[in-house]
Amino acid sequence: MARPVVAIVGRPNVGKSTIFNRIIGDRLAIVEDKPGITRDRIYGIGEWNGKSFSIIDTGGIELDDQEPILKSIRMQAELAIEEADVIVFMCDAKDGVTGSDEEVANLLYRSGKPIVLSVNKVDNLGRMDNIYEFYNLGFGEPIAVSGSHGTGVGDLLDEIVNKLPDLEEEEYDEDIIRVALIGRPNVGKSSLVNAILGEERVIVSDVAGTTRDAIDTPFERDGQRYVLIDTAGMRKRGKVYETTEKYSVMRAMKAIERADVVLVLINGEEGIIEQDKHIAGYAYEAGKASVFVVNKWDVVVKDDKTMQNFEQKIRDHFLFMTYAPVVFLSAKTKQRVHKLLPVVQHVADHHTKRVQTHLLNDVVSDAIAINPPPTDKGRRLRINYVTQVAVKPPTIVVFVNDPDLMHFSYERYLENKIRAAFDFEGTPIRLFTRRKS
Ligand code: GDP
Ligand code: GDP
Image (cartoon, rainbow, N blue to C red; front, top):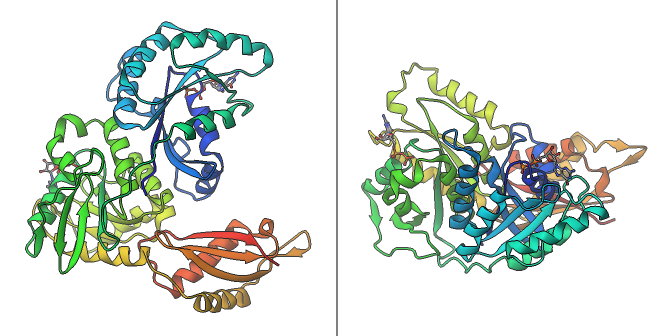
């Protein structure tokens, strides 16, 4: 089920990114271990009391031009109002209520969206007195937090989770592959959608999806049913809405959440930019299958090494996603577009693949025999057995004598051995370590 979206808004320097990092905390650490994902992330996945949500720090969204600050904050607030399910309005106890706070409050108030008002930099009890004036903003009791010390963050999370809506279940059957196309403006998303739908042997269904505000495009090819997530929005709203990076970021997040397979589009003409990494990182973290699609291949001047070199560049930039296949094509000339859907089907199969426990244990036993787990302060990690507990993505639990003895490098070694034995191309796999002696 898609995760609801939480957005943090507020003036610069009130501590939005500090609180954001605290909220995605542990998960950040896990992902940051993988080289290639940058630290200046503005969106991630938060979890509290068993509820999962995606969260975005709107302060980090790059605006297209040098807008005055107040205008920027207002745009960020408008974006949050349009796209988020819950908005965290962050203020600063040191500064008190400012004119900009009041202005943002007005916008948020009129939106009717669930708002959580939070006042940061309440580093000591003395500052508790400063929070009372924030009642005047009209959002009830402000939640006092300190990004520096981490105090109050639990209360803030309680309040966020309380206000999360129950998103309705997707209406699509399990055997339909849900595909999202992700990439910065002008990379060719709409063109590729049209190229796919224009292909022979594709039967476009006229049943429009109606999930929330999204308009999806279902179709069938060679007996496999697919749905392109949110593509009508992409084509119709087109330039006005999509061209600005700031809007595409949140739409991309939501589309990824609803997808099984994420097509990460890269402009073959211009190469890879930082933004491509952020969005791919989110697809990885959300546990979705992925395919890199290098578009505009028609305009690239090629020799016999060009494709290989480009693929190597992708591998170097996306170290956390070595599992994703790369397809080179041209949405414009339709060159190699027909190769895409079979790859999508292939990675979707792996995303839902289950490996029998005895086969998995055979592979892990062999791996241990070749390269025994390291010892830590004289104690050796003992792996008792492994079993796959979930799909989408394949999730494997490793039962051990003491989870603290499991090191990241050994976990990666096991993952590589599992990947080598069973074909999981295109999908992330999750390994969890649990105690069982
Ligand atoms: P943003 O612009 O709203 O994202 O704010 P940042 O998270 O970048 O924080 C702005 C500044 O406030 C930084 O220098 C932080 O170290 C500082 N800061 C963040 N949280 C706290 C806090 O709880 N107490 C104090 N005293 N400073 C904080
Ligand atoms: P979107 O913003 O990602 O949906 O991108 P569009 O599909 O609107 O494409 C942006 C521009 O790139 C348009 O002018 C397209 O004609 C052009 N374009 C898209 N795909 C290709 C391609 O494969 N080759 C070339 N040469 N141009 C392309």
